[in-house]
Length: 218
Length: 396
Image (cartoon, rainbow over all chains, first blue to last red; front, side):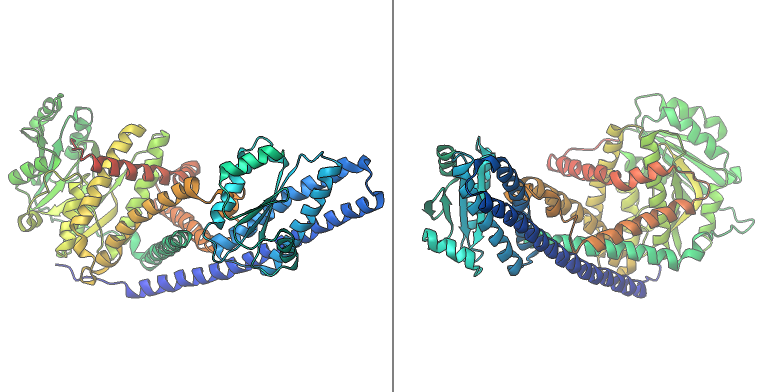
């Protein structure tokens, strides 16, 4: 019978190396995460500037419909990027538990800016064919908020006029002045709440009901 | 749910980094000894019995026997036994045609490979026993190279260097890479007395192993692994050679490959489960590393599969808009450990291939093996589960 060997030194070294690799991984991951949050913040700022420029043009030209194509295409491009940034922030929060409240506040400001512009353009340039959806949620004490977010996205994707449905999501607990103002405007007192073209729905709204609302308004 | 998934991801990543690092450390520790093979002292020619269980092996048996007859060893000290396990082709005729060369042929009712080996064992008179698969063939010096290991009295078994001849067939070339990797790993494990298998093609044992531990486990799907695990459980020393060549004919199509590997996987899981008690420091590195690694690898396969299914079918709806980011490719703490494991594994594979100086393997097969062969392994595991659930019987 052979005498058994235990390569204790090798196990210890392997463990130390594995732990070191993980520590470096955590550090690099944190650095990358910070960089991603900074990138999102910077992208939000530049989108906000784009919208501000468009709004300036709007102020100069008053209600001149000749510039509608410029306004609409600008808003469209900004909204596509805005939504992507919003999803990234969600991934960071839900998958990696990384909360960036200041970036979120900047993001909500951009959303509010975009919402107000869409509201104005809807009557001037698009004959009211856009469906504007405000979705108020909370990351705390709201069991149905994740489900509501999914229902809104699914309803938008399944809708015939999905390209005309603009969704603006707001975390009501963040303490963002612009979100607080919008909540006061629509008298939002519970989560989730959905505002579809100014009509307030308090509590969870099922997907099918949302689809009906979207088709009525588009 | 995501927290649990994250935790699994982290555990798998840590174990991967740890295992790869351990193997690299083993390689560095035993680098000088790796190429050192013992030399047989002149004049020592104990009697050796070679047992070849054969079932419908008429195609390859002739070459197998021919190369055994050409072994560089005194004729009167080697006994070649063919056990025809109720073949339905002309295996028996092929075997009988070698009787004039001294080959002993027995015919029995079909009972499986383990039973055929035991039938041969009962009739073998050698001080050493070599098992041989009928679809494999040896080199003239192979036997002496293996025998040299037994000059160390504690060595109870030695596995040969099972290889595949280059053919140009992609599926065979991929198996060549795999065989070289397994061979290299087994050699390293032999330095820490943790070899978990004595492959069918030309593993050699002291005859007393079977007297003390009993014969092969009849009905076992991978009896060559079971005997090795049984030996490890009794602290018997098993060595591995990387130069005592024996060439085997691998499956040449996916269907046969899957059939073979599913059998290995099913048998492997059953065997390791049977010897799970060896997860204990008293079994040395075998109990601390090899057996746990087997279970961990299997668990990792199923966890990864579960994660893939979850990611594709049950992930939150919003992730479809940011799918790449959700997978964690662009920003994730696990990026560094994953990259480390991948790079280490590539370095490992490079050392494996370059250590076999006579084996020329094309880079494309190494890359395909590295990046895609794992999916095939996942397939083996799934089929294994399917067949186990259906309790399908195995016939060789």
